[in-house]
Image (cartoon, rainbow, N blue to C red; front, side, top):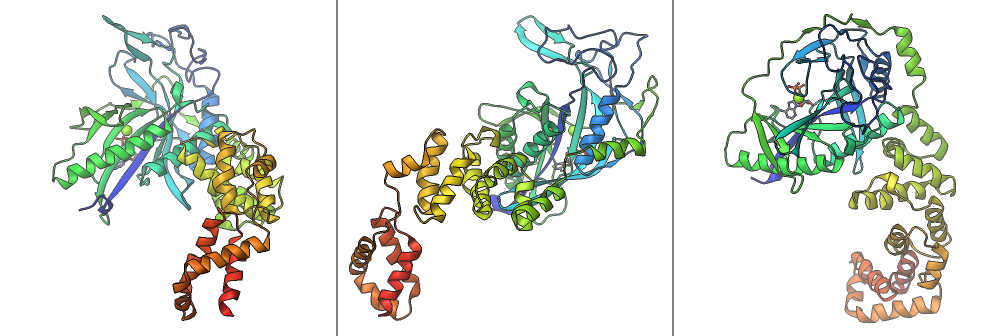
Length: 481
Ligand code: ADP
Ligand code: MG
């Protein structure tokens, strides 16, 4: 059985550290990178007798993200204690939400390849972070830094709707942009302010029932998430093919080769003995608060889409492609400000440019080609001076490698202009027809597909600089006679 006969099923749990000034339940600062244990009060350390006090800003941020992800907001909420022992958890419990995640049932719309896909959000809940254990700094000890203890987090959990590493890549990219745009999290994965647990299983194509999942913990790069899914899914498929039992495991990622290793095998559900946090009253999110936050949100996916359709006469599908990708959208808007050929602008952004980014695993933010240079390529094509193949395959890669390149000077210097001397084009056509003389009769008898052979020959001899449309026209006239 081939790998194509299997379906990969992924659900992601993303932790986003909130950009509040102070921690979730006390006034300790939240600055990144401070000396260990300098942002810790007795409350962060859970000393007996201390009392937590809820940071309202964290609620606002949760609602903001929830609304942006099309969730419904739960108005009556409470915090719960999740009890477990670990050295980095001084209280012996984590304050989290349990049966009332503040946001439920939303979705994110991502674009993958040429398709728009909806990934459902199961829930978003608020919880505090634990401290950090530092192994390896000292061979005899594990050091503990409690600066992170009590930091506010949102956990954003998808339904198992993701079907490939690529889709996961697109989803986390979108989520990172969104949290940045909304100013709820800085999205810095290398500093772990955004980190992701990947739940993954495989099943035979067409099966309804989900396979046994493994959970890969704490990935802090979008690229790793994609690679981990690709590697882990083939491991699971291999196990499945061999008829071996897949254990429900928590696994870690080996960043050198993207393989995973077992950390523990879940035999039973962990029993955290959740109960309502007695030191915090339940909290209520009012209609007014929800409306106020909703009104201050940036435009939604469908609003952006509609605006693109109106302003640039794009199709709904095209507008969707751009609306799903804030950075590409921004690039498109800059480009559209310097050209009137919006269709071509769209094609460049979602074609050559997007392919370049994904082939080099770059983020759109890394794209430093000035939009006016792409606009110049579009203009040169529209004026019939160069053709699209030359622009996309010869000039664009040079621009990507050297954003300072001047388009006109380069075209001139490399002599990339379309052949506009009729004599030259005619003589290339004659050569091509002589070379393939034996095919001409076949063509005349109706094998019209041979046209691409003739045109291809001319394009080859002209080093791609002939105007293929014109050449086709000329040949067809010649062979008619
Ligand atoms: P838990 O709270 O025990 O981690 P959840 O049921 O809340 O479990 O699921 C956590 C994540 O795992 C969700 O993103 C969910 O979509 C995903 N998930 C659950 N079952 C599977 C499965 N069989 N295969 C892939 N992902 C799964
Ligand atoms: Mg989990």
